Length: 74
Image 1 (cartoon, helix red, strand yellow):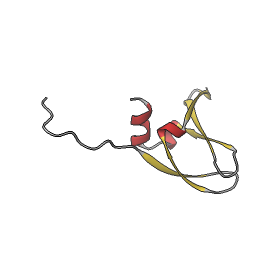
Image 2 (cartoon, rainbow, N blue to C red):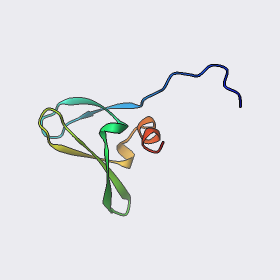
Image 3 (cartoon, rainbow, N blue to C red):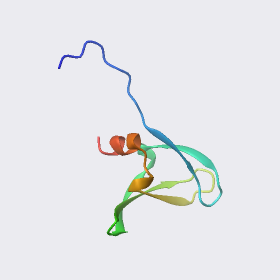
């Protein structure tokens, strides 16, 4: 395929709420750290640190948006 004009870079974002301080945050794939899960139905979890209370929050695969998951794998 020949590219005539390059498109703009798309960065997936999603909004989350910190479970501790209830801050509403907008995160991207670069904000997430991959962690091995210990459950067979959720083999990998992802964590982010809240910039307000500095607590670590966890997300499962099913919690991620399609855009975030795409960015994590590319």
